[in-house]
Structure formats: structure tokens, C-alpha cells
Image 1 (cartoon, each protein chain N blue to C red):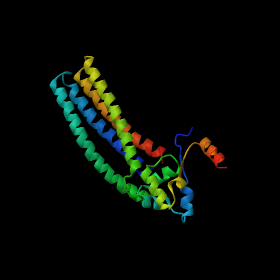
Image 2: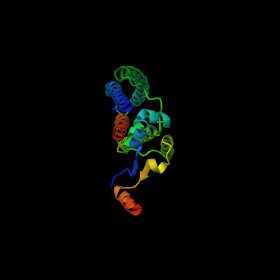
Image 3: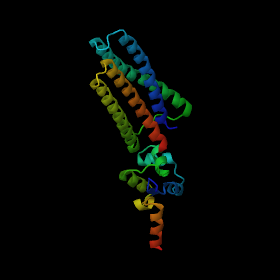
Image 4: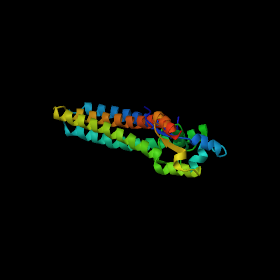
Length: 82
Length: 148
């Protein structure tokens, strides 16, 4: 089982937002670039405040940027949706 | 390697160098004294005071030089923001320092309880200080590199 069950789509969202750099996102959120790198690689789970701030930068609800669950749970969730 | 990792490695190395310098000095001085005399405690007291002061001065000088060289080599200046991840890593590293030093303190007191000399107690205390300091810096490197 993966230790970090918080997943995110920041990398994809940055690309869709005029190929925003990690540094630009970090400045908008108010954290260091290294923190954005760690969040993107899913090696660090941000606090709720930082998660909301990231979602606000992309003008999306939190659950469209971050999701929670193991791969098994995700696949079960997808089955239910189908 | 991140800025903080490099800074921690340099800080650790400077601490060890300063410690060795002062430790060899105090060992030489206490070797001439009776193991349980009050003069031994005085020498060790001076050792800890001078060690702390020297570490502060050396670290300030080393960090100024490091920042200059690092900025010239990588064109990356010192991070201006200390965010939640930095604070979390600092907390974890200081926790490791405290645990290690507490074990060292316990061992030093155990040495006294087991009728060892005061000199031995101070030697254990000094080593627990430098080992805890090294673990503090190693923790910084470990947490920054693991999550980088």
C-alpha cells in the first residue's frame, strides 16, 4: 500500500494554464518551488490551506485538483460511477 | 541537491571540526588533573561555553561564505520564504536532535550512577551533543532529499 494516498493533477493543470512553471505556481501560492515539486511528485501532502490556495490558482474546486484513495479504491469508485 | 541540504551538510561539517578542535584541547587539559577534582568540572564547563560561542561564530562566517559561493555558482539565492514544509522538516529534525541528546544525557547520568568519574560523564555528554547535532543536520538532508 502506498504511504501517500493523496493524489493530484497539478502537473496537468499547470500545462493547461499556459504552461505555468513550478516557480510561478509557488509564488502565487506563497510556498517554495521545492514544496510544489514535492507535492507534484506526491511525496508530500500539503495542508488544507495550501491545497485550497492551489485549487484557487487554477479556479477549480479542491476535489478536481486533489483526490484521496489507494489505486484499488479509485478503481472501485470508477466502477460505481460507471 | 537543495539549498537547505547543502547548508545542513556544511553546518554539520563545521560543527564537527569545531568540536574536534575544542575536544582535543579539553582532553589535554583534563589529562593533567585528578579525575574527580572540581578543576575537571571547571574545564568542561569552559569547554561547553567556548564550544557554543565558537560554533555560533564559525557557522555565521561559514554561512556568509557559502551564500556568496552558492549564489555565484548556481545563481540561486537563499530562499526568502519559509513555508509549512520547511517548518515541518525543522520540527522533525529538532525532534531527532532532542531524542538523541536525551539518550546521551541519560547515559551520562547512568555513568555517574555506576560510579564512573565526572570526567567520563562530561565525555559522554560532549559526544551526545556532537552526535545529536550531526543527527540534526543529517535529518535535514534526509527529509529534504527524500521529499525533493
